[in-house]
Length: 322
Image (cartoon, rainbow, N blue to C red; front, side, top):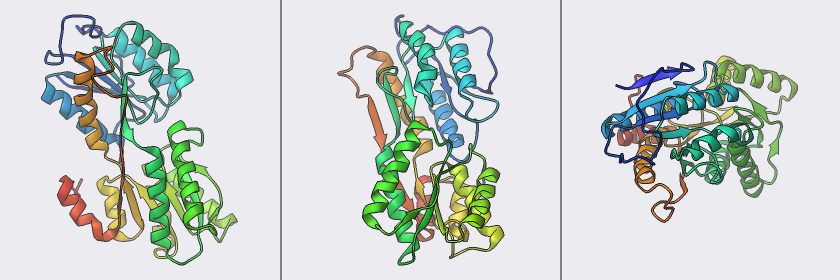
C-alpha cells in the first residue's frame, strides 16, 4: 500500500531498519521521501514519479511533507518519524545541513541508506539526484538574454528563500553568466517568495513601482515564475516584462504558450522521482561499497520557448489539461 502524507506520523511498521539485515532491493522495503511540500509544479511531479517507481519496485512508498511549505523543523521531525517507523531507505531533501545533521547522523548510525534529492552533501548522505545548479544558472542567463534581445536588461532573480544553499549557487551562476553575456545588465534586486505565487506577484508589483526600469525576472522556484506571469497578465505587460520560469509543469507550459512567461528552464522532476528509486536499489544492495555507485547524479536542464512546447509535451507525455 502506498501512503502519502503531509506532516502525519504513521504508527507501527515492519521495516528492516536499513541494509544491515538480509533483505535486498527486491524485497518489500519501507521507504520514505521527506520533501519541502506536497504537490506543486515541481515537487508534485517528483512525488508522482517517486511513488510510481516505488510501486513498480514492490516497495511501500511514503511521501512526507510539512503542513506548510519549507518548514525545516517539521521536515526534521518527519525524518525522525520515518526512522522510528522502520525506514529501510530515506530520500531527504536537505535544505539546511546544520539543522538536519543530528537526524541524518542517527540514520547513518542505523545504516539506513540515504539518497538526497536536489541538494545535500556526501558528509551525511550516500548519493544524490538533482539538477546541476551551475548548468541551471547558466541556462537561465542564456534564456533571459535570448528572450530580451537587444533591449536593456533590468532583472530581479527570485528564490524560495534568500538563504537556500542550492538556489544560492544557481543564482550566482546566473549572475556570473549574465555578466559575461550582457555586461550592461543590471540586477535590480534579489527576492524570495516561500513557494507562494501570490507573494511573488505582490513583490514584483511593489518592486516595479520603486524601479520602473525593471523589465525581467528569472525563477529559481516554480511559484516565482507563476507569480511573475500573473503579474504580467494583470498589468498587461506581455512583450514588455520578460519572465524566465523554471520547470515544465502544465501550468508553467501554458503560461509560456500564452505569452505571460517568455520561456522556462526545465528540470526533470518526474524523472528525478524515478531515478532516485533506481539509484536507491544499487545503494541498498551495495551499502558501504562506494565503488558500486557515485555520489553525484545530477543532470542538466533544457530551455523551452513557446515554439518548443508542443514537441516537449509530446516527448515527455505531459498532460496539459491537468
